[in-house]
Length: 118
Figure 1 (cartoon, rainbow, N blue to C red):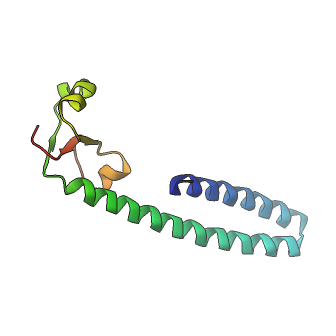
Figure 2: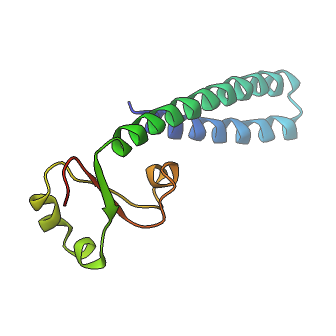
Figure 3: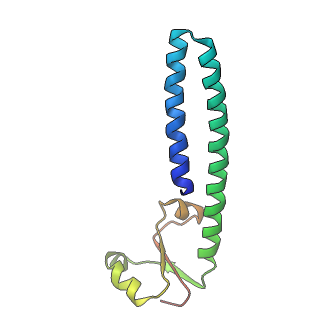
């Protein structure tokens, strides 16, 4: 299971526990409420560690991509015909600025990274 999937699963569990906590508080079940609060704390720690792991993976991928020798912004025509561009340039990696990787690399436009000039 990927880190993204694990993180989503943990967030879903946290949401369920929060609903359970509100129900326990309404019913004034102190023992259930205390147990659910402990589970929420454990899950928050797990979520924090997963986010750190995801950040490390993203940073490593960003370093790997930025280490490619050539990069430049892609024109609108190249973006429109991405299939032909990828066939012409072997090893091309396209990064959009609105993706997590694009934010990590602080991009402002769609950029292509490749081992050779294109």
